Image (cartoon, rainbow, N blue to C red):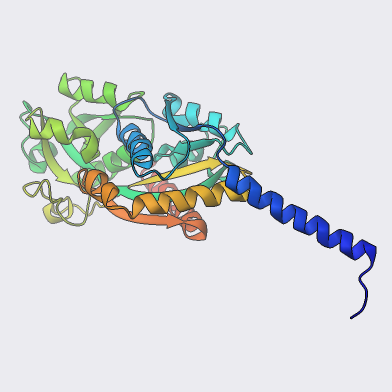
Length: 318
């Protein structure tokens, strides 16, 4: 066997050192608590999503450190997104996303966009329910159509809700003026107080108010009726070609170490496939169960961005 030069031996030693360092890094991570940033105020769908993740990760002992939920509402999500994007390379920051992750940059109203983040995992799909105040004279979509002109509460200038408003406005031939609020709490207060006529809300956000009779559900944005709301028809079965769900996903800042990304992908997959997650979050809030990561998630982000671009252009929003 030929002798290896001292340079080759040194090279092998260096590579071995790099490999052992990577393993040691992965074993040590995370060395401290991790922040999970939410782009909306407490009580909304994204906040419920984040706090459920934090609680169940701990209960299932999937993480060695605590996930600290931090709400940074404002600017249709731009406050939180700008903060997280500014943490490039920091593996101790995670971020929930909403439609504003895609729509606000398309409007040119955000200094950052999807390319400034690292996709981690999508672990649920969230439908929407169209609802009005329980005391409203509007009982059906036909009543809504007869009203002619209405106001809708939203949690941003352009998001899933405004897209749905635009689609409904066009399909029903009515005018719907969107009134933006900084968070779901203010939006809910507005519709319950009679300051706006309707709301597009996730089941996790407005389900209790519907059950209590404070809100009246008119339609759901899924292809089929929700199990928990069997009496609420879909838009499609009422003659409106409207189907749209919100992606529940997590991102990290750009340029985070691959080992940190792998760590969280593994943890989110374990969470998304657990009975606890399915029973206490997905089934409880009538979401779609899913787990998407890696190149497939990046492709889904690209597709979602393209869909928003097309819908917003068609609706005259951009």
